[in-house]
Image (tube, rainbow, N blue to C red; front, side, top):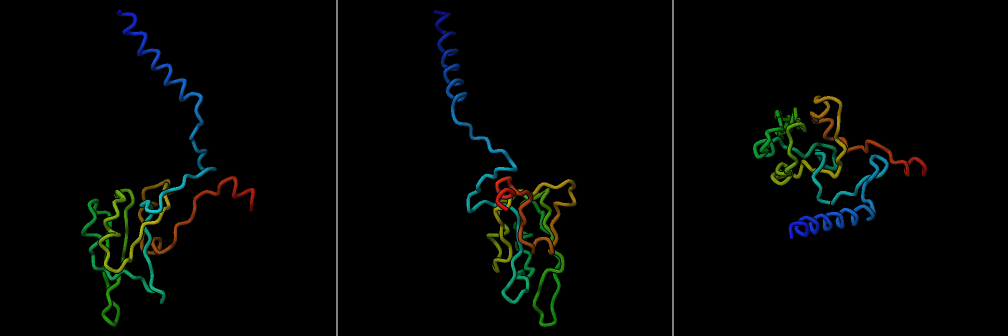
Length: 151
């Protein structure tokens, strides 16, 4: 009875191991192969502009207020026509938890989250995005081998 108690679970474990040993592998060879993210993936932040080229943000501070990580810093200024705009707008991605609250609360849809997920840097300073960097669309970090061969 004691031998049967040990042997059955052992064989069940070996069966499971063999099942996955000969199954198709799902590992991606990053950066040559990239995984497709969901359309609602919350990645890198981007500030948007009007068709006229002016930034949409009116420095209402709602995004900075609602941010649970307190990673958004805004300093407001006013144009001659009293329209407010952010003189300084920074997001510290070392503190950001990518919750998306800043996007949801913005009344002007001035901030969006893209599907870009390659955000690694060699220093922490590289992960503090200022207004100019947030206005640029995210660039792919690495070209895959397939793209290099095609181009």
